[in-house]
Amino acid sequence: MKKLTLLLFLIIICQNSYSQKLLTSWSQQNIENYTREMYDEAQKLTTSELLLKNTKDNSWSSVFLTLNASINNYKEDTDYLKELAKQITNIEETKLKGTSRLIIWDRIISGDIIFEGKGLIIYNDLFKVGGRANQILQNLTNKNFGYVNINTTNEELENLKNKWLDFLTNKTIEEFKPTEYPNAKIPEISSLTAVEALVVSLQANATKDAITKNCLKNVYNLDEMPKEKGSSASYCNPDTYTFAYLRILFGYEEINETKDAKWWLNFWTTNQDKLVWNNDLGIYEVSE
Image (cartoon, rainbow, N blue to C red; front, side, top):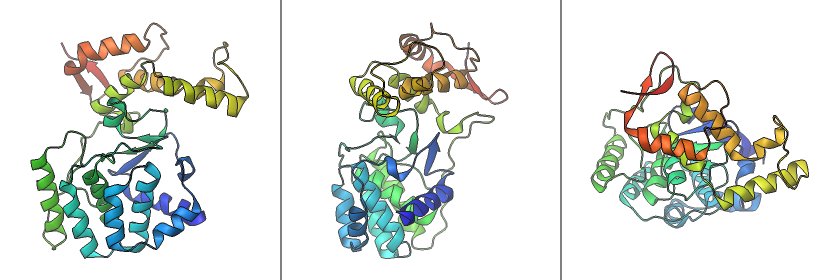
């Protein structure tokens, strides 16, 4: 799988500024149901077959295969890129399976993805055909004219499609500039959407509990979380990462166990419209 690993590395390096980012750690080995045989078959697909596949992909592994095959084989195929651009207005949605360590903040908020504390952050909504098409175009061209997210309107999708089509006919199009967070300790988690997703992810969830138990058993051969503080096994629980991220975002240097999941949910509900970014300190503060 050396070719796969190298390709993923190149994608991340080229696109790290806007299309996708790593949070703590991720590799293609984290993708569920992703095999060499699947990879080889995807490389044989024609552009017509990939376009159809993009409309039907129903798992993170199948989405990644479409992206992978597009980059390997059709990066310079302008006709293919134009057809992808036309798919941006396709609002059909699929509940993706096998999303372990895939991070799409809106989908964590909606409950479609479980946040595991680390993984690959994608800014397009891969649950939508248009979001997948936009992701492929961004990876193929190193250009960003905006994202397709869970709330993107039909008018915005039409405008985004037209920007891609204009660009692909050699017109000069101004690129989208994502919001910056000066002095952020971890820029990848610094948007308000990410903050909300982190708070939501702290709430009780049976799937998250199962992830924790499986990690304890498979990595540490434990049936339950150790009671002693500071055990490395605590990182089997995604909440360990999440509490740390929230402390960083709000400048809380000390661990305060009273700031539990319920506290953070109440804090977010009460203050979400009053949060402002302090450019000097690189943290969120509640405005008066």
